[in-house]
Length: 211
Image 1 (cartoon, rainbow, N blue to C red):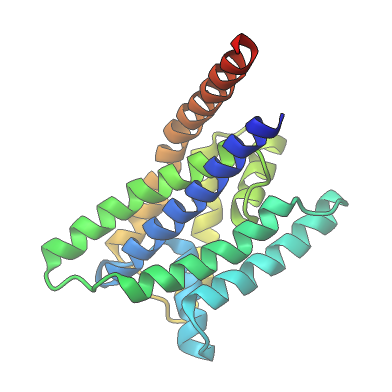
Image 2: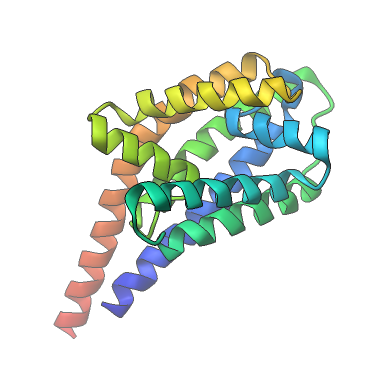
């Protein structure tokens, strides 16, 4: 049981770091537009100051409070850690990574960011330790309606995008690319990550019993 938890927490934390990296890559390519949630975070940053990561944390906290009331249960520790760590890592990566100097560089960062974000979500959600605030909403709607994760994610992000655009967040062709394809990548990365995690746990369990 302990080793199983170690594997799950490792997937969870690694996935969060990868998710934050992907989000930051897309933010760095903002001349093309950024992810819908980050349009909101950047719009709030433009209007009210603080940092992009701080607004990611604040928005996440509000969503956690709302979903807790809807579900009538306390949020999982994983959801709270997601809220805090993704915002912190976004600020760290935003400080570490250089801005692209050419349009080709921006396009590369955007496309890389979409793939990295999609796999980050799949990896950390597969640990089943509590989805982050935004992905909790996605999973609730998915479970209640039976709609595909990609469809649910796109719908939520379009609504968020409208609010971020109203606040002055950068919207462009990149925003459309992220909104359309991140959910598709999650549809692939989540089952892949779940299978890999279960295989690692099973293999470790067999090795322990054999010894």
